[in-house]
Length: 236
Ligand code: Q5B
Image 1 (spheres, helix red, strand yellow):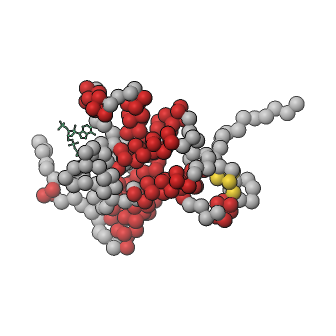
Image 2 (cartoon, rainbow, N blue to C red; image 1 turned 90 degrees about the vertical axis):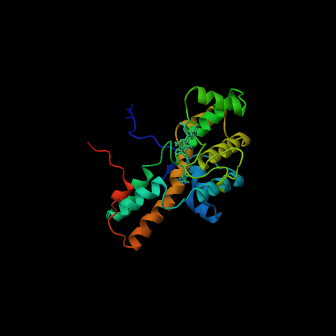
Image 3 (spheres, helix red, strand yellow; image 1 turned 30 degrees about the horizontal axis):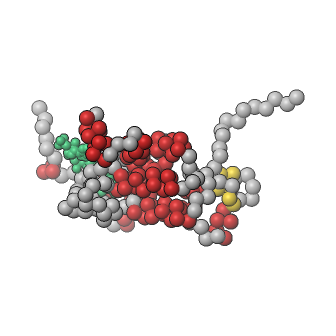
């Protein structure tokens, strides 16, 4: 009989072989006809299922909330410096995206992992904090360079616990997963480990980074050079 060769790629989210692509099995013309939005596209392409409207609306809310936070944060700063060095749009955005990590914007998955683990171990919040301190670990999703109980982050709105936006998104998403019957326990754990939630920040902040790049180009800003008087030189 015929011997089948193993395929070089396995893909399960988008089928482009027909007249139009399908996202998680749904034709894009059906998505258009039903006036469905970016939350639905993410739901089908990432979560591979049709999530209810409240869940897709929440995804969209996170995207709006995290789209930008001004020119001074790590990502926007890198994008602005790259744009002023004459780089193209994609390079400027990539330069900004590459700053997303455990200290900036990419603490969402880490926060979800430690919050979920603490919940599963039945730890009270103070026990959780003491445990992290004992292990010498910073709590992802807590703390902010400029926000504090005296200078509240309106995206988070908590005075008592200084959750940052990463921690707030992580918490709310764990609640979303737990209250939706669509997700199993192991699946939720895996999603916190392979980057689903940091992915939301990447998509959201790309909107702002494109904006900053275009802004600098439109303003025809010259090459950036950091001033000497703002640099501490400790050279031999
Ligand atoms: N301490 C965010 O640090 C920051 C602690 C902690 C235990 C903590 C810090 C941190 C976890 C990572 C995280 C997401 C680096 C932040 C974001 C998006 C953004 C950004 C924007 C946007 C800030 C001073 C003392 C030290 C530390 C202790 C601090 N955090 N202890 N757990 N989590 N958080 N990142 O203020 O005894 O003096 O050594 O790593 O969640 O990125 O808007 O800018 O939308 O773009 O510089 O919002 O919190 O403070 O590092 O000088 O620490 O507090 O151990 O104690 P800071 P540091 P000690 S949201």
